[in-house]
Image 1 (spheres, rainbow, N blue to C red):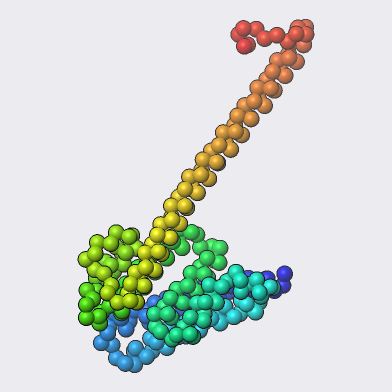
Image 2 (tube, helix red, strand yellow):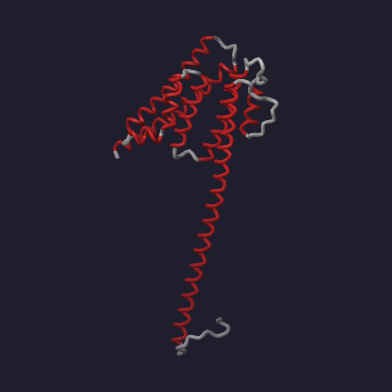
Length: 251
């Protein structure tokens, strides 16, 4: 219980700092893509910030693993976190740092009890649109056959891909770009399913609540009717009418 409390306290205290670092990662990832002509010092600073943020989330995973009461069970239930931590180490690509950091941020958001599902879904949609646009722009901008050359093209492509509309006016031509498209389409379908399930669950809960309230009112009316009958019987006995029969008016 003490270890569980320590793990819970760690997650509570590190939640806001980690999300602040995630915002710093977003800025550091976006600057070199939006400003490809930026100075080399700025690009190196952004790269350093990306690695620092990833290292902070990796340290968070190690700390939670150390504080977990059952470490093998923690690894089994948090295998996606472990993959996100190891991914950039196996292949230090900028795109993999993006994927791993997004996965780690998403896992920490799911553990935050005060974050409601709607807020999480909205944040996930905004994050996927932003990072999907930046990622595909960085991959497709220098492709000789590519037609995603500006940030506006990339954002439009992300919208049409996540909603699975797919107008076809902009499409990735590289292998990495197409992998991003697949991931974005699957994410859009998954988020749509979450929203639909959330709305359906809300309606079901509402109907169940109304049904319980209706049953409670019916039971209260039945009990009140029984009490009225009992009182009428007692009143009839006081009047000398043992049968306690009700007059037509009373009926």
